[in-house]
Image (cartoon, rainbow, N blue to C red; front, side, top):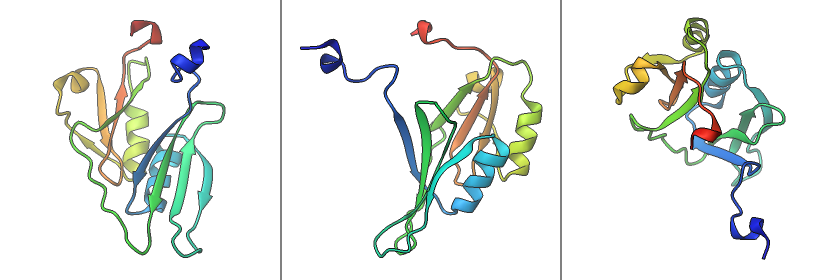
Length: 143
């Protein structure tokens, strides 16, 4: 048996973070205009039973966000104060990025865990999910 067969999850594993959204237009503005991601795929549910879908991310990365909206039976997003998407930016100041995210529909909030207020800023997306802009560095070698 190959090592990959024993441990199929690795550094090259593709990751999709999928969430329902109230408005694909609003989350696109937040993640594309605010954060700087790109639209990777978009569909509209003109076929009965299909959902509207927006995928955003960056080219040549192993992760992306998928946002869905069911026009017939919309789901209400249910984020908690500890549902976090953390970006380790390794820069001392994120004020310009925070301003862009706020202009794009985000809201700055205090962290549930004070660690994130000490080492970054939290901005909620239009559906209430929390994006952490961490000023610290992190390396995969750190575990």
